[in-house]
Amino acid sequence: MKRFLFVAASLLLALTAEAEVRGYGELTLDFKRAKKTGQSIVIPAENGQKQKLYVAVVCEGRVFNSTDDEMIWGEWRDPNNIFESRIVADVCNFI
Image 1 (cartoon, one colour):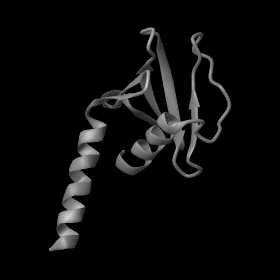
Image 2 (tube, rainbow, N blue to C red):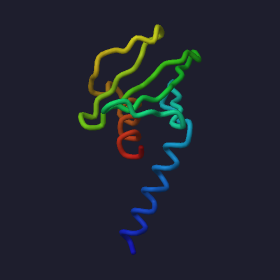
Image 3 (spheres, rainbow, N blue to C red):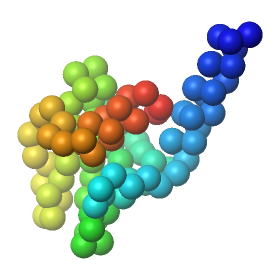
Image 4 (tube, helix red, strand yellow):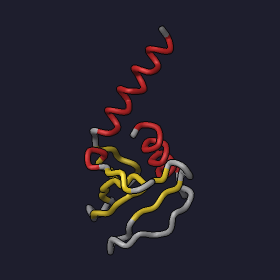
């Protein structure tokens, strides 16, 4: 019974994460529009200045990437701060 409840709770969390907008510091990610592209999951985002950008995560290596204000991708890297770490964890655990 406990295992069933754990699985049910995990599925509910996955559906919730996939279908909502979430904030991570000054970033807001739109999980409703997340797309799988090859091995990465790309999510539209907005920074504190209301500029549009994209965030991408590869769960296999648990690496992070994002576009800059000119929509140019940076290098794949480990998360730099708690917010990036939470983004990677949420994407890899719930989507």
